[in-house]
Image (cartoon, rainbow, N blue to C red; front, top):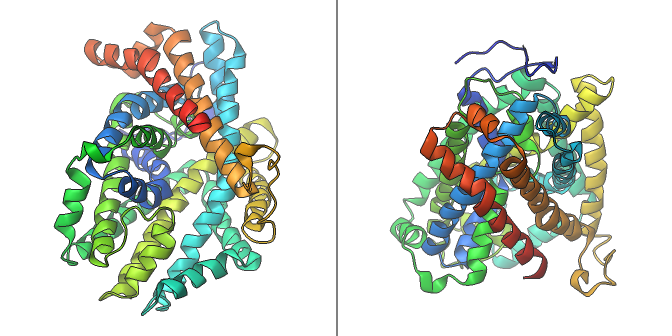
Length: 465
């Protein structure tokens, strides 16, 4: 499938580029979904929640929450053919509904902007660790020395600012080049490279002598090890790992050609995202087990536990370097997608061209990111909402993470599911999604009844659990 570089759809008069192929969209959308959540978070939450049983529940949650909402967001973007906020308004008006439904996209875009501000700081950690790994700084390291390395990074506002600036600059550089020269070109290079690096990592992990143990841990369900809390964590992670509730898929969907199946594309993205998460587990857990480390080591697994392992194994310098290059690629593709919806909106609503819009939004996001940097060191004792027991001791970094992940994303996703499931004409959905009778009925039932309830459960658990 080949599309022209511009199109005017739905009578909006919006001339805009289109993805050159279905695969280009899949790679870009998968690049958005495949991020630190897959390579950093998924392995350790799997380790904390018993392995195989958690993975099974997670896959089920992808099917009942992730894919239906992703299809809905892509539908809204393609149907509106504008930035997410305008697309939501146009679709609402065509269905004789209140334009206030665009609040779903507003919440999602604000969340994406805020998330990128601190995600860039974490992406900077990945970039800095490439140098440490390549220079052999992990070699012969002890838990204390590796901890000091990480602690030294976090305690230095100057170092963090440099890496935050580099990472944000990389993101702005790509987004400023637009659809064909930026988003699509980078996705078609970085995603295959990421897969190759991940397969190399899995190949290396297979030589540790503990690969079978890792396979058993990931794919042998032990429901006795899975608590109700673990089920709810799987539910929440399935929602967040696909970049839902951030208006990203609406933005990417606005560039999608009419002859591309939304359903098949969403399923392909979900499969690719899940495969990366599982491969990350197969790359990490053999190393963890080979070194007698704890599978549920928590967030420190990537930046403290694994460097310790890399420093004390054959070819650890090479493997450690490749691993952090892989981590940077994953963070970069996700960072690009987080910036795109806001830049798309600024470009359409102001006189700024694409480059100016990307620089302006990137600069504002970079400035907000400085507050997260300072909350890791100079402002570590500052708890803006510390007067409330729930937020006692939470820094600015913690609060930004809490409110985006636990309130804004579920709220945006819930509003999207309710709007598409209950307020968009059924015939319009049938026509656009191009699903046969049985498949459409399944999706329609999920988006109207099952998905909203599941998101509400995630919402309630995050707030009160």
